[in-house]
Amino acid sequence: MPQQQTLKQAVSFSGIGLHGGNKVSMTFLPAAPGTGLRFRRVDLDGRPEVEARTEHVVDTQRSTTIGKGSVRIHTVEHVLAAFAGAGIDNAVVELDAGEPPIADGSSREFVRMLREAGAVQQSDAVEPYPVVAPIELTIGETQMAVFPHDGFKVTCTSSDRGGRFTQFFSLEVTSASWEKELSHARTFCFYEEIEYLIKNGLIKGGSLENAIVIRDDAILTNEPLRYREEFVRHKILDIVGDLSLVGRPIRGHVIAVKPSHHANTELAKAILAQMRRPIEAARTFAPPPVASETKSASTSPKSAAKPAVPVVNSTPHSENLVQDGATLDVMQVMKVLPHRPPFLMVDKVTKIDGNRIVAQKNVTMGEPFFEGHFPGHPIMPGVLQLEAIAQVAGILMMRQAENAGKLAYFMSAEDVKWRKPVRPGDVLMIEVEMTKSRGKIGKAKGKCSVDGETVSEADVTFMLMDR
Image (cartoon, rainbow, N blue to C red):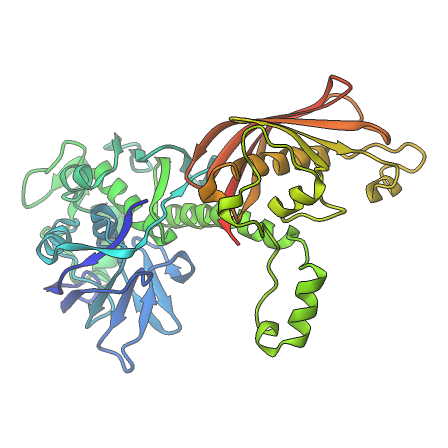
């Protein structure tokens, strides 16, 4: 797993602010592990800081503005894109105004600053977030989507409402490709869109020194285009900066049609929601602490202040129960899984062989769900068969010693099929084969059967988390 990075030394730059037209001084400073990226207003009392996170986005018209209370920092996306492209996780950006210098309208100057400052690895690891399921959104003419992908890729189509200057570009974004293919792309605008802003003094620092202006079919610029597709490449630059507001590097393929800062930040929020979903679901469905824990918590003032956590695996790592050829009775199962009756869907593990595992659940008339599903016609709910598959897959993940003591959180299910009802008296056999295991994410194929007949099947995805 890669390590977090910060800057070796501070570095400064002064230039004109786009909105105010005044000189702005900016300094990049090293920061401790876990700090993230944050902006500090040294011109205000108390030197307030605003973390570069989606929850602090307050405006996305023509640029991305973050803020807390009355504190605002405008047009942060070009700076954020430079940090994301360079793989800098922790830094403080000091400003003596409400916006960074616009420089030449690209991230080139900020890349130069980061190169001058240098990077240094830190003790803590950084965990890129792998997108686990497609996310799609449509906002007006804008379409955004992100799909699972081993790296970080952006595919973008850019044009104005009239279809002028339509451009397409696709890039696997790495530190090298970012600097060469994206960081020099300047911001651009259509004259009719900024005429009002110019007349009303809302972009006092705007000029051909820091933007390309399109008027009718003419391109107004103080130098030749830096890329043939400079417009769409700048749109991708903005996407890189806006998506960094998630707070972690992303592993996914972003596809954008006519993107905007509003759509970019909404996609960032949707990614963050997907990232948090397994944790929130686990908090919802985690079992209560066992009686002994509850008792000690109630009698010890020190422990009473700690939140209850599910018991995962009291067995030392050196005594891992989940090994090839092993069988587990229900007491051993409960040393591996945090679940407890009535939500424990595994009574016994009968076989562990490499990436395959077989377990069973004895379906009795005493199951509490039969009281309402259905009176006079008891049938085991299909979702509980799906839960049984997920629990057995979680057991199999504990076969690796480094996973012992972790929690396997059920994240998603695909190709789910329920073929026959499961009734009281049936012995449900659960067979699972691990198809993919990368880092904390596991994927598996599962099947439930009764008397040799398949009653349900699904592909499941889950995530390992520390307890």
